[in-house]
Length: 163
Image (cartoon, rainbow, N blue to C red; front, side, top):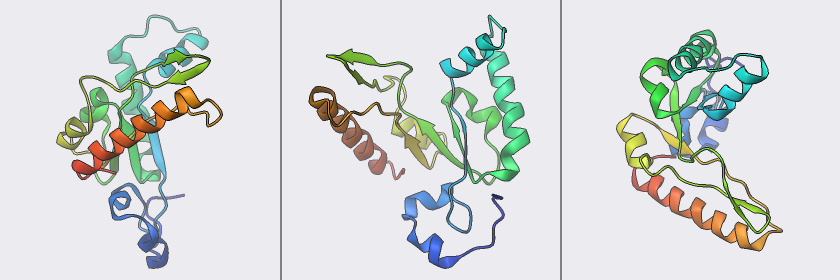
């Protein structure tokens, strides 16, 4: 799918206004996810490349953004990558969670970053935030806390005008 799709007002009108900057003119969200942190290091490790530093990771993300920017409507970037990897005309989504999780009686709890939130994302020009969520409806102890985490994050995002 190309980000230069012909507009279809019926589809675009169905999107929440806060999601429109992340979508193609036809209303489809085709996002390039480059917020990888530990996952990218693990991919390098599986390929036999060890000791990858932050500068190398950023350079790889930049090359991927260059190669795919014309084919997407938006990009998901961590704060460290915004300056070098954001491309003109693309919507910007930013992560709120830290890497990993806290265990809770067989369930998992996500953690929010302490030094980065919706206000910081808005200051960097983001259109929205994402929150990776481990969720098991059948695990009451973690489900309740995860739902509260989502509600708090959504409230903070909306207060900043972010999706």
